[in-house]
Image 1: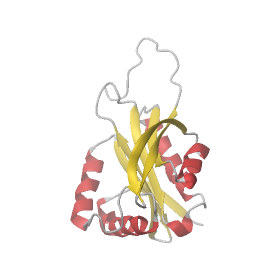
Image 2: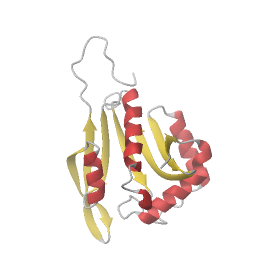
Image 3: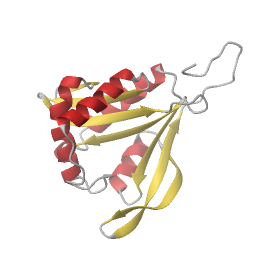
Image 4: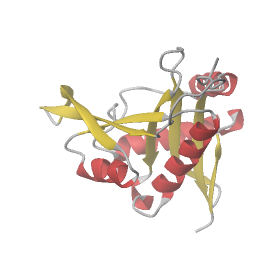
Length: 181
């Protein structure tokens, strides 16, 4: 498998629309149901431009044989108090799950975050999504809390786990600066 992981470009907008539509059709535990939102190339072009303009946001794409097959989205926090944190989500088309694509995406995003001085990466998973919870645990994330009745899926209220991976930063020394300032 010749997998390419790289940051998103404006020219990816049309393929990105198709990727997100496919993922929303295939996943049970996404934040949107199929057809609930109607993304357009213009919408995603604008989102990509925003990501490109913000040095603490990034979208990484997984590409196999010229086709987008997954993405990891890193969203930084804009304040001094939480500038060391970011929120990370990842998704891969169903037929290529459990083949290392998600792991490659997350590792690339984590390496990027480390270079930015990020020491805390957060994510969230519907608690009934055992595959998702297992994946994030395998990647070193721990459950830190639960949002009760956070989602209504299959006409049932479901909880959401808040998970995080925290890198130790050690003891502060003179001259040490927080990321972003």
